[in-house]
Length: 295
Image 1 (cartoon, one colour):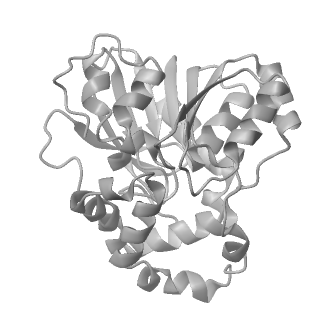
Image 2: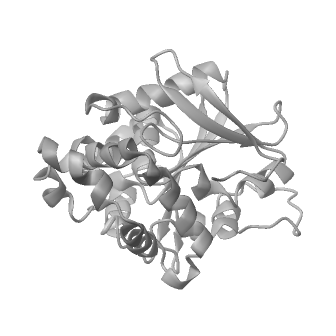
């Protein structure tokens, strides 16, 4: 599994005060300004594979984690840890343990909901927040069906339902251009499914996480009260979080301090599909070496 065979990336497990153990991958100088990368539902640190080298070359300490239930992090066998508030606490505890006092945060999809709420709750250690297709800005199709599947027997079946074929279909769905998905991508997204608890964790997140978006004017008011400018990156071909662009436009009209970037050819995982363009739009690259690979 990624990042095997890449000695420039440092991998370790971090034990948090609340009892959760996370896998962490990092690059760059330990004393450099930190950028924390948070993936969405069903992904892992692999989502950020093309971000480590350019950001480190641009003078950042780059940190990515597998969120609870994902990758090689802990996968609890009950619903409570997968609700929004416990996931927020995990990120707060990570900031504590890693002593991150001034961090730029880039969060995609489900993690966008987590990171935004953390900011709105007044977390002072977030120096800058960028949200990539945040789940709370759009309508997520299929969640009505997911909430009908809360019966325990469905969770027990999940390891059998999460086949390699389903991983292939899902990953092609998150790209604006499905032809960009490689066999290596499928291998990496398929790998965590070998742990039966992984499929059950995804099921618990799908049925128990707070996926609904608030009214645009309500969220705009909360952002105005916080007073922090938030970058928002949207994929023009996002098929998983729909109707986000009109919602963001309504928030901006209501006075929300948002700086919006639309990558027209990008899908839901635009940060994975077009990593260099997203990093450039977020002005994260200052002195990057053009020879550094971005795929």
